[in-house]
Length: 272
Figure (cartoon, rainbow, N blue to C red):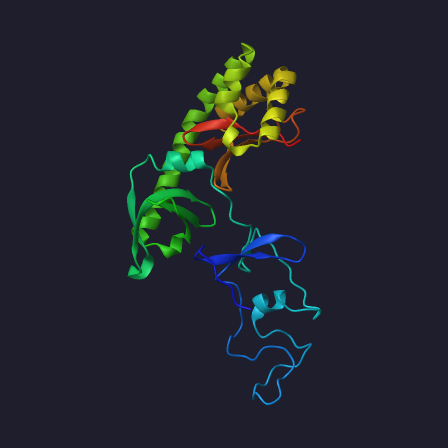
Protein backbone atom coordinates (compact mmCIF):
# COMPACT_ATOMS: atom_id res chain seq x y z
CA UNK A 1 0.00 0.00 0.00
CA UNK A 2 1.37 3.39 -0.95
CA UNK A 3 0.99 6.54 1.14
CA UNK A 4 1.47 10.26 0.62
CA UNK A 5 1.60 13.38 2.77
CA UNK A 6 2.18 17.13 2.63
CA UNK A 7 4.98 16.70 5.19
CA UNK A 8 7.49 16.13 2.40
CA UNK A 9 10.03 13.68 3.89
CA UNK A 10 7.42 11.14 5.01
CA UNK A 11 3.93 10.50 6.35
CA UNK A 12 2.14 9.75 9.62
CA UNK A 13 0.95 6.17 10.11
CA UNK A 14 -1.59 4.80 12.59
CA UNK A 15 -0.64 1.41 14.05
CA UNK A 16 -3.09 -1.21 15.26
CA UNK A 17 -2.20 -0.57 18.91
CA UNK A 18 -3.29 3.07 18.52
CA UNK A 19 0.24 4.49 18.31
CA UNK A 20 1.04 7.17 15.73
CA UNK A 21 4.50 7.28 14.21
CA UNK A 22 6.12 9.33 11.46
CA UNK A 23 7.42 7.10 8.63
CA UNK A 24 10.14 8.74 6.57
CA UNK A 25 10.82 8.28 2.86
CA UNK A 26 13.98 6.36 3.76
CA UNK A 27 12.12 3.35 5.20
CA UNK A 28 13.01 0.00 3.61
CA UNK A 29 10.21 -0.56 1.07
CA UNK A 30 11.79 -3.44 -0.85
CA UNK A 31 11.36 -3.75 -4.61
CA UNK A 32 8.08 -2.22 -5.89
CA UNK A 33 8.35 -4.25 -9.12
CA UNK A 34 7.85 -7.52 -7.24
CA UNK A 35 4.34 -9.03 -7.21
CA UNK A 36 2.17 -8.55 -4.13
CA UNK A 37 1.23 -11.33 -1.73
CA UNK A 38 -2.29 -12.67 -2.36
CA UNK A 39 -4.48 -15.07 -4.32
CA UNK A 40 -3.79 -15.10 -8.05
CA UNK A 41 -6.64 -13.72 -10.11
CA UNK A 42 -7.79 -16.19 -12.75
CA UNK A 43 -7.98 -14.81 -16.26
CA UNK A 44 -6.09 -11.63 -15.45
CA UNK A 45 -2.63 -12.92 -16.17
CA UNK A 46 -1.40 -11.61 -12.79
CA UNK A 47 0.88 -13.91 -10.83
CA UNK A 48 0.93 -13.03 -7.14
CA UNK A 49 3.16 -14.36 -4.39
CA UNK A 50 1.27 -17.10 -2.49
CA UNK A 51 -0.44 -16.16 0.80
CA UNK A 52 1.80 -16.66 3.80
CA UNK A 53 4.92 -15.54 1.95
CA UNK A 54 7.18 -12.83 3.28
CA UNK A 55 6.28 -9.37 1.99
CA UNK A 56 8.54 -8.30 -0.89
CA UNK A 57 8.23 -4.67 0.21
CA UNK A 58 10.71 -4.64 3.08
CA UNK A 59 9.87 -3.19 6.47
CA UNK A 60 7.03 -1.09 5.03
CA UNK A 61 5.40 -4.22 3.62
CA UNK A 62 5.96 -6.25 6.78
CA UNK A 63 4.11 -3.62 8.81
CA UNK A 64 1.02 -4.11 6.65
CA UNK A 65 0.74 -7.90 6.45
CA UNK A 66 -1.94 -9.86 8.28
CA UNK A 67 -1.07 -12.88 10.48
CA UNK A 68 2.24 -13.57 8.78
CA UNK A 69 4.31 -13.68 11.99
CA UNK A 70 6.85 -11.03 10.95
CA UNK A 71 8.60 -9.56 13.96
CA UNK A 72 9.33 -5.84 13.73
CA UNK A 73 11.37 -4.04 16.40
CA UNK A 74 10.96 -0.28 16.31
CA UNK A 75 13.27 2.06 18.22
CA UNK A 76 12.10 5.60 17.46
CA UNK A 77 15.23 6.98 19.17
CA UNK A 78 17.66 5.38 16.71
CA UNK A 79 15.66 6.36 13.58
CA UNK A 80 17.63 3.87 11.47
CA UNK A 81 14.45 2.09 10.37
CA UNK A 82 12.81 5.26 9.09
CA UNK A 83 10.14 5.37 11.83
CA UNK A 84 10.17 8.27 14.29
CA UNK A 85 7.96 10.03 16.82
CA UNK A 86 4.98 11.93 15.31
CA UNK A 87 5.41 15.55 14.28
CA UNK A 88 4.69 17.96 17.12
CA UNK A 89 2.56 21.08 16.85
CA UNK A 90 4.48 24.35 17.15
CA UNK A 91 2.82 26.79 19.63
CA UNK A 92 1.47 29.95 17.98
CA UNK A 93 3.51 32.12 20.38
CA UNK A 94 6.73 30.43 19.25
CA UNK A 95 5.88 30.95 15.58
CA UNK A 96 5.12 34.62 16.20
CA UNK A 97 8.49 35.11 17.88
CA UNK A 98 10.26 33.31 15.02
CA UNK A 99 8.61 35.49 12.38
CA UNK A 100 9.80 38.65 14.10
CA UNK A 101 13.35 37.71 13.12
CA UNK A 102 14.89 38.63 9.72
CA UNK A 103 13.51 36.52 6.88
CA UNK A 104 15.90 34.30 4.88
CA UNK A 105 15.87 32.70 1.45
CA UNK A 106 16.39 28.93 1.69
CA UNK A 107 17.68 26.90 -1.27
CA UNK A 108 17.04 23.19 -1.71
CA UNK A 109 20.00 20.91 -2.43
CA UNK A 110 20.49 20.16 -6.10
CA UNK A 111 18.82 23.40 -7.19
CA UNK A 112 15.32 21.99 -6.63
CA UNK A 113 13.83 25.33 -5.61
CA UNK A 114 13.89 28.21 -3.16
CA UNK A 115 11.67 29.44 -0.32
CA UNK A 116 11.51 32.61 1.75
CA UNK A 117 10.92 31.90 5.42
CA UNK A 118 12.26 31.45 8.93
CA UNK A 119 13.98 28.69 10.87
CA UNK A 120 11.69 27.29 13.58
CA UNK A 121 13.87 24.52 14.94
CA UNK A 122 16.57 21.97 14.19
CA UNK A 123 16.81 18.76 16.20
CA UNK A 124 20.12 17.07 16.99
CA UNK A 125 19.25 14.34 14.44
CA UNK A 126 19.21 17.00 11.70
CA UNK A 127 15.45 17.41 11.36
CA UNK A 128 14.66 21.00 10.34
CA UNK A 129 11.38 22.89 10.59
CA UNK A 130 10.92 26.04 8.50
CA UNK A 131 7.89 28.32 8.22
CA UNK A 132 7.14 30.28 5.05
CA UNK A 133 5.52 33.69 4.61
CA UNK A 134 2.04 32.10 4.49
CA UNK A 135 2.60 30.39 7.84
CA UNK A 136 2.98 26.89 6.36
CA UNK A 137 5.42 24.59 8.17
CA UNK A 138 8.00 22.74 6.09
CA UNK A 139 9.63 19.62 7.56
CA UNK A 140 13.07 18.93 6.08
CA UNK A 141 16.49 17.62 7.01
CA UNK A 142 19.82 19.43 6.82
CA UNK A 143 20.72 17.32 3.79
CA UNK A 144 17.68 18.71 1.93
CA UNK A 145 19.33 22.18 1.91
CA UNK A 146 22.43 23.51 0.20
CA UNK A 147 25.60 23.48 2.30
CA UNK A 148 25.54 27.22 2.95
CA UNK A 149 22.05 27.06 4.48
CA UNK A 150 22.83 23.94 6.52
CA UNK A 151 25.99 25.58 7.88
CA UNK A 152 24.03 28.75 8.76
CA UNK A 153 21.55 26.67 10.76
CA UNK A 154 24.28 24.88 12.71
CA UNK A 155 26.07 28.16 13.46
CA UNK A 156 22.80 29.79 14.57
CA UNK A 157 22.09 26.93 16.97
CA UNK A 158 25.57 27.19 18.46
CA UNK A 159 25.17 30.96 18.94
CA UNK A 160 21.73 30.50 20.53
CA UNK A 161 23.09 27.87 22.92
CA UNK A 162 25.90 30.22 23.99
CA UNK A 163 23.41 33.05 24.52
CA UNK A 164 21.09 30.78 26.52
CA UNK A 165 23.93 29.57 28.74
CA UNK A 166 25.00 33.17 29.41
CA UNK A 167 21.47 34.14 30.47
CA UNK A 168 20.80 31.11 32.66
CA UNK A 169 22.52 32.15 35.89
CA UNK A 170 20.95 35.63 36.06
CA UNK A 171 17.49 34.25 35.37
CA UNK A 172 17.85 31.57 38.04
CA UNK A 173 18.71 34.32 40.54
CA UNK A 174 15.70 36.38 39.38
CA UNK A 175 13.44 33.39 40.03
CA UNK A 176 14.78 32.94 43.57
CA UNK A 177 14.22 36.65 44.28
CA UNK A 178 10.58 36.48 43.19
CA UNK A 179 9.92 33.38 45.30
CA UNK A 180 11.64 34.82 48.37
CA UNK A 181 9.47 37.96 48.10
CA UNK A 182 6.39 35.74 47.56
CA UNK A 183 5.65 37.41 44.24
CA UNK A 184 3.89 34.31 42.97
CA UNK A 185 2.05 35.98 40.11
CA UNK A 186 5.23 37.48 38.70
CA UNK A 187 7.04 34.15 39.07
CA UNK A 188 4.30 32.29 37.19
CA UNK A 189 4.26 34.92 34.43
CA UNK A 190 8.03 35.03 33.98
CA UNK A 191 9.07 31.45 34.67
CA UNK A 192 6.16 29.18 33.70
CA UNK A 193 5.49 28.90 29.97
CA UNK A 194 1.69 28.85 29.78
CA UNK A 195 1.77 28.36 25.99
CA UNK A 196 3.09 24.83 26.54
CA UNK A 197 0.46 23.85 29.12
CA UNK A 198 -3.26 23.16 29.37
CA UNK A 199 -5.45 25.09 31.80
CA UNK A 200 -5.43 22.09 34.15
CA UNK A 201 -1.64 21.76 33.99
CA UNK A 202 -1.24 25.47 34.67
CA UNK A 203 -3.48 25.13 37.74
CA UNK A 204 -1.40 22.23 39.03
CA UNK A 205 1.83 24.19 38.49
CA UNK A 206 0.38 27.23 40.32
CA UNK A 207 -0.65 25.09 43.28
CA UNK A 208 2.82 23.53 43.39
CA UNK A 209 4.47 26.96 43.52
CA UNK A 210 2.19 28.16 46.34
CA UNK A 211 2.40 24.97 48.41
CA UNK A 212 6.09 24.11 47.98
CA UNK A 213 7.69 27.54 47.77
CA UNK A 214 10.54 26.65 50.14
CA UNK A 215 11.33 23.44 48.29
CA UNK A 216 11.28 25.31 44.99
CA UNK A 217 13.65 27.98 46.32
CA UNK A 218 16.05 25.22 47.39
CA UNK A 219 15.82 23.70 43.90
CA UNK A 220 16.67 27.02 42.26
CA UNK A 221 19.51 27.60 44.75
CA UNK A 222 20.96 24.21 43.90
CA UNK A 223 20.59 24.98 40.18
CA UNK A 224 22.51 28.23 40.71
CA UNK A 225 25.33 26.24 42.30
CA UNK A 226 25.44 23.86 39.36
CA UNK A 227 25.40 26.76 36.88
CA UNK A 228 28.25 28.53 38.69
CA UNK A 229 30.38 25.38 38.55
CA UNK A 230 29.50 24.66 34.92
CA UNK A 231 27.73 21.38 35.75
CA UNK A 232 24.72 21.99 33.51
CA UNK A 233 23.61 19.61 30.78
CA UNK A 234 22.05 21.70 27.97
CA UNK A 235 20.57 19.84 25.01
CA UNK A 236 17.86 20.25 22.39
CA UNK A 237 14.88 17.92 22.69
CA UNK A 238 11.50 18.06 20.92
CA UNK A 239 12.11 21.60 19.56
CA UNK A 240 13.14 22.91 23.00
CA UNK A 241 16.49 23.64 24.61
CA UNK A 242 16.58 21.97 28.02
CA UNK A 243 18.94 22.56 30.95
CA UNK A 244 18.99 19.61 33.34
CA UNK A 245 20.51 19.87 36.81
CA UNK A 246 21.10 16.25 37.77
CA UNK A 247 21.00 15.30 41.40
CA UNK A 248 19.28 18.33 42.92
CA UNK A 249 15.75 16.98 42.70
CA UNK A 250 15.23 16.72 46.51
CA UNK A 251 11.48 16.03 46.65
CA UNK A 252 10.73 17.76 43.32
CA UNK A 253 10.10 14.41 41.60
CA UNK A 254 12.88 13.94 39.07
CA UNK A 255 15.67 16.21 37.94
CA UNK A 256 15.30 19.99 38.07
CA UNK A 257 14.75 21.18 34.49
CA UNK A 258 14.57 24.56 32.77
CA UNK A 259 13.67 25.06 29.11
CA UNK A 260 14.63 27.92 26.80
CA UNK A 261 12.01 29.45 24.50
CA UNK A 262 11.99 32.74 22.62
CA UNK A 263 15.05 34.18 24.35
CA UNK A 264 14.43 33.27 28.00
CA UNK A 265 14.44 30.33 30.43
CA UNK A 266 11.32 28.78 31.96
CA UNK A 267 10.98 26.34 34.83
CA UNK A 268 9.58 22.98 33.75
CA UNK A 269 7.18 21.76 36.49
CA UNK A 270 7.70 18.12 37.58
CA UNK A 271 5.26 15.54 36.19
CA UNK A 272 2.27 14.86 38.41
